[in-house]
Length: 145
Image 1 (cartoon, rainbow, N blue to C red):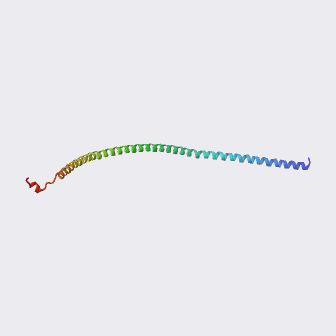
Image 2: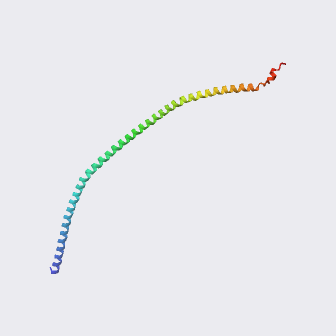
Image 3: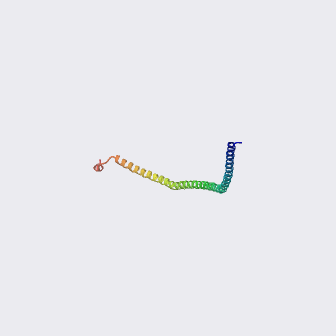
């Protein structure tokens, strides 16, 4: 072999050695990266589990609070419905209490008015009859004839 062949062979050997070192370095870097990713995944898992548990607890509490609020709203609706019904009954009773005697009083007043109108009519009739009688002069009544 000639010196140029040996030189090229040395350069090739050196290049193969550099490539092998780079590959070994890449393998170590990959292993380190895999360890870090594993640590991050473990840490993330440890931190997320309590967070998920808290979120689950919060959502169940929110659901329970919503159910309680719905029950309270139903109770409030029922109470207001009953209250409106009672107020309507009370107002109807009060109206009957007031309007019943008022109707009777109006009927009595109408009867009294009718009686007064009848008496006025009788008085006017007697005045008309008295006015329709011929007026006799006093002197004529004294005339003996």
